[in-house]
Amino acid sequence: MTLVPHPHGLHIAGEIDYGSHHLLAGGLDGAILDGRSDIRLDLSGLTFIDVAGLRLIVTTAARLSPGRRLVLAPLSPMVRRLLALTGWQHAPGLHIP
Image (tube, rainbow, N blue to C red; front, side, top):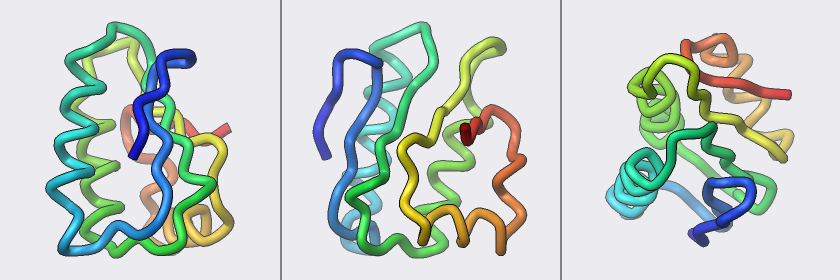
């Protein structure tokens, strides 16, 4: 996970699973506290994410203050498909361009 200053957000590569949820949670919490604008998650380098990791992203989006969004871009085809299968692509606070 790498902090990206502009646009404000994180680049996440590799795998998100039970062993790395705490890293994702910490990165997302830090991104929420560090800015007042949208948060962009670059998930193009993600090779695997379990449902709990995806749920963490969706619940983080719902926690954002009004007017802020969690923007998933670029997005790997795998994550796009998981969001569609779970129905979470329309979750509050989440934006998928």
